[in-house]
Image: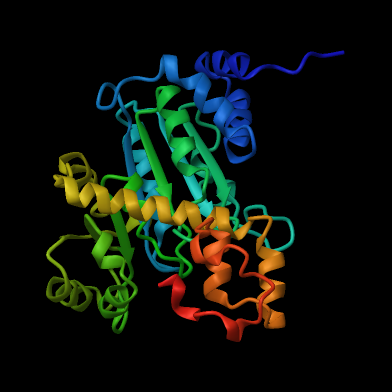
Length: 318
């Protein structure tokens, strides 16, 4: 009977170049053994800033060309000899919970390169545009000596603010089109953009989109035709030159957004959620008290579930 490898065994194999072992470790950090993997990393992890990989986020609306941009960046950094990982966060299947989009289809040119790891990660209902496992996956890949980690986020309407807490820089990719800059501003994408890229810049309307973006934001704006590599050297140069200079308040705001997003994901699977939802639906508990109970903020909410909603002050959550 073959002995199941331990986390330490898998780490040793992954550091020796086994992509299979790396894949198995990523599966573990996506599941219930995440803490076990992270604990095993601690002795070998480099201190912050010492040999840490560059983590670059790429987000934007559907159809803007995020995957094409990521594939072009992989090629550019591989030409330098960098070891590159791509975590492509995909919408989850409502039936299986698995990633719907195929990373090997989107980045076929790099799948046989031993210096490139491409991994689809299912969002599984996570709010912030990143999968819950991504921060842990980044730590794992850092410990495995990856030089660059590219995070491509889901881009289908979730709040993307969390990417700015994990990646530096955060790149927002847009395509030319009527009102695209304004729509991106309304969606909050421009607020998290360190670099803005107008992809498909050979299309009509690209210059107008750039002008509109200059009105909406002071971020650096670049143009790109990703599938032909036009503008790619300038984008790589901008990524290399960018170093976010956050003050403590900004760092805390980014951390707060990440914590709240992860907490929301945990609350969605809390064992008491179904019971509290049934009580709210039946009118025996109001949603404010249910929210307090779900978050463990007992206080005045203790013992309130099961009482008629009209007998309690419904604004006690505020």
